[in-house]
Amino acid sequence: MNQPNNRRRQILCWAQALALCISIGNFSKATAREQTMTHPTPEKIVTHCVGRYLIDLPETARYTGGRFSYAYTDIEFESKPLEAFQKEVALAEQKMSGLKHNGNGPLLVKVLKPTDQSRVLSYWKHDTSREAIVDGYRWLDGKRYLFRRIVSGPKIEEGAEWMKRFIAQLQPFNNEIPTKAGFCLPNAIILDFDGAYPESADLFFEFQDRRDITFDISTAVNEGDPPESLLSRKPSVFSGLGVLGATLGGLHTIKEGDRPVGAANGQQWLITAPNDRGYKGHLFTWESPGKRQEVLQPQIRLDLESAKYGQGVEPSPASLSDQEMLKLWESILGTLRLRPTEGGGTPSDIKPSPRTSNTQPLPLGELAMTGAVCPQSGYWQCPEPDLHGSIRLLHQGSAMPPAIVKRDLSFMERVRGTNPEISTNTVWRLVRYAEQPNTLEPPTLLNSGAVPSSET
Image (cartoon, rainbow, N blue to C red):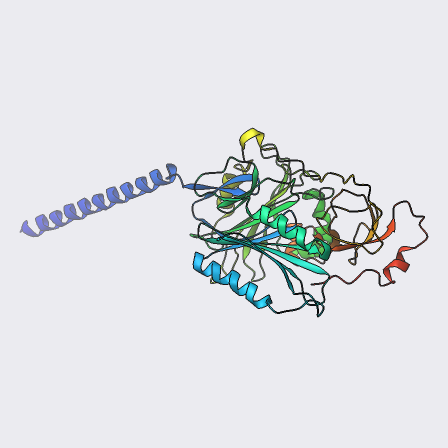
């Protein structure tokens, strides 16, 4: 009679024991999770050289592309075997062979071959152009570098010789950060020479483990006065969006204010806003305006964004929370610093030396490209609607400036506080000597046909 009761008690004991085991197991798992969260494994970081600065990023941040300019020379590069490089250069030269400029001289003016792994091609932009292009090719450690500079026709031979010296300044570096003074590209550096100026770098990164997260960094030497500070441009952002539209659109500021980083004074503006698919995303921005024509104190901008999509990434909510984005932001921003170099890192004087020759004044109508040394003091005119005046007094020996023009901004550019003013290379024409009385009004000059339309 007692056997069923004993059986029930036995089953109950087994159940209690099983429950106790499950409880202990769950406790152990919870404790393990807690310990993992409390003592995370440090993430590996990689130091990247950007222009003249260094910044540390998580190992998962993959370089996806960039834009680079140095001494009014645009730079691009791609991985390419030496054989493919040689074929590319030979094909570029072959395409121009036999073509004529203005029906007379050859389109290809000069070819220099400093080494088997470098080439300089100087040629007219097209068959009737008064502008020329100088291309410098350099193969280095499995990459093809192409340097392109536009010069005025009379400077085409001089431009080729300059390019020959320029591409020789490129040196590789792999895992070691370079210690010589110069301008960094990914895996290579252009050593300072000739007082070269100005320079800019834009690098774009994507996180391999969270592909909706991107990071951009840019540096640019201010050719004129530095831009307004980041937060002082906020009113123009909201005036473009409309305060009501920004509020209804869900724009929210997480943090803003002054934020010095090392020796660079800057400001940050950290916001959340829906992307055009309605998903909440982050846009964290820090900017330092820099100083005028100071290579070691350029304008610097950092952007960290989430909920990005495209190129195989489907639209979705941000993969990181506000706190996680803030943690990632702080881990990156605080590492920005000037790259230490031998002798303190001061580059050679960026301002060209004045010309002291006593030659006769150049004839009116002389052309000079952006970046060239001004050959004659006087009033020079460019075809673009320059915000500082399409006719400007420029002095012999100074650098011919770019034209500063204004463009319309997109919605996201307004949110990011992008400067609507951009600089563009141009061709200046001498229209009046400095000592000549001002008898001609700008409208007359602008309509006289003396300045050709800018060529593209």
